[in-house]
Length: 451
Image (cartoon, rainbow, N blue to C red; front, side, top):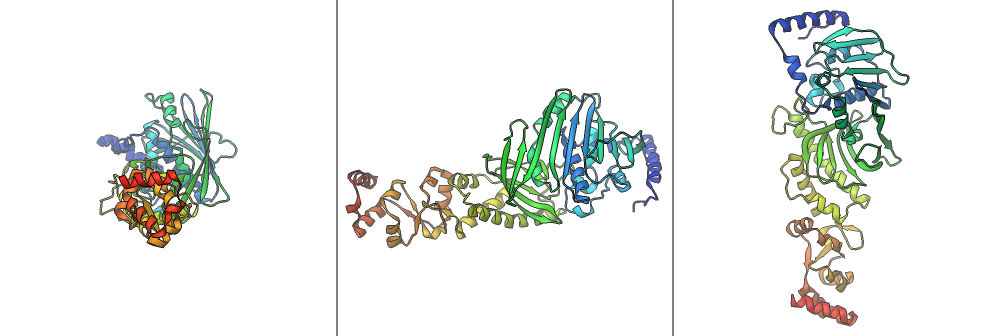
């Protein structure tokens, strides 16, 4: 059992002894753990997570400023200032103060996350509230001279660069940051990125709208829309987004990273974002799906299935299910557990719900619709004829036939009546439809029969 310290100074004295002992034994575990991260800007994800948690403790909207200089990076946020427990947690491997986040990824659980800053610095500084420390030897808190914290902020980090770190290269990586992480944070609503030597300024801002399911992201980062609307559906727990699905209403994306607050290395062939409190590997890059010791991931997958249902119903409610989206939702390759889950739910939704877009832009169950073998049949056979002869209320939206994957899925999986040229001949005979056709339509009719 870990020792309980009377105060921070007792902890610092013990850490000094540990550091000396590790040096004498040649232990390098701190250095090894701190170099696990392949992504050079991963430390920013961790600092943002720290700021999010600090804002959550006092339930305040948060903002964070990241200021690049030639010699290092200064980061400011307005969350709850550090306390002694926080300082002990970020300098003790395997310790965390995030009791309310019991299902967060293993970086958060085991306190490795902050160590990612050692990828760019040997001596990070923390100035927060009454505390002013540098961290040396990866875990030793060292008292330093206070630095002024700008008005409006409560915490100031200073990360002087290692000799081998290029401010320019790091800045170029940060400019390509996947800004969509802000969708899944509950408290941080604005991030500023400043490069003083280059006189460059960027921002990412989340706007909450009157519609509680529509989020707007504003940004001037390269390759970002200046303003992008997202439909966001979430399952919350303790005011945090345990699971979320977010789809851009302004941009078409067919592949997206899986998010655990921030993007992982796992990619999904889905036109929307999926975020979850999944337990990850220590680098936050992969999710152990088959590990029996990580049961929470399987539990989350089951809950995600219900969220997929709600997501599809919300799209239908907003009349956002279009032929193009039907095609994007129909995966031809689904090897990832989440892709498999999505495919099952998508097919179930199409089979049993009011899921089929009709020519009249309404949604009906598949049993009440008809699929034309040729688009021209939609103009030749009126809806009332469909109803009289085959008990069908409407044609499927004809443009769906332009998309091969959803068309094949409909034919293979759904009980939908396919109307062909023979059915057309039958309709003409039964309902004496030939009187309503013009010469051009009659010629079309014979061409269909010839086929």
